[in-house]
Image 1 (cartoon, rainbow, N blue to C red):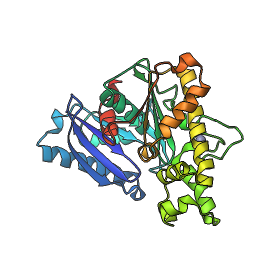
Image 2: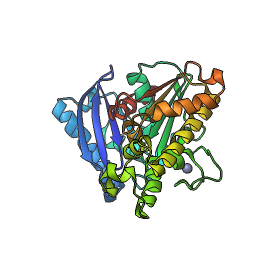
Image 3: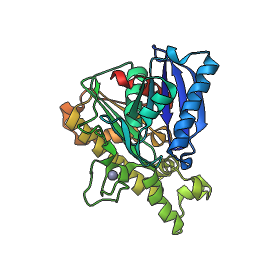
Image 4: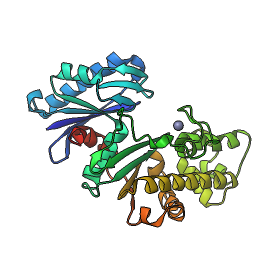
Length: 314
Ligand SMILES: [Zn+2]
């Protein structure tokens, strides 16, 4: 058995996983990252112990712990360099969890883990060049190249969300302008539409959200776009065009077999991937997209647990 752990900004999920890639038991707790690194670290240790006790398993029977965590990870020192979601800098999480639990521990970027988990267990290892694109509030990317997880020289490669699609474009939270994330990340898109609503714009969108501006999400914007709402037509049309352009760039650069799409914006919309595919095909060189599969993620939150548990084998 192995343990896979997903530490997110709001929740921690710990799963007991067998060698066939089945999650046999799991526990979920609130992260409460405002209590600081030490509190979260101790909570992880406690949940691991509780899970093992409930499953009647001894720590000795666990091969390894894999932790998926948002942020940049230094694979040489095995410390978390910076995690904006958790407000951690230079956190020795691997070392600490290993010491506290007595179980060999590995740590991986969350999107890398999710991409690996989806590829290995959601798609049964199909193809050898696979790209994961997770579109939620922001955009994360993961790359499997020649059947191996690609981490780059400093371990922080695969930041697809921050490739520049327009040097003169919208500002991005990373400090750059015109990033893929600034065009297609959920919080950016919602923010732009929201500005119009705050200035008094009404239209089909207003009826869809029944005036509940706080709950506005990408699904509402897509629906209003399909009904011809003026602002949503412009904004969502831009999302589709830029996502398609990003896919074309990825396809021409890497010529992958498969692109897996996950995250809240993908799960919450109906035609985004299909429409972006048309843009990609219009823009790309034909051989770069021949046989390329664009698929939605299949495992949901399990991808992160399974990826975390197995990614050290990648
Ligand atoms: Zn950026």
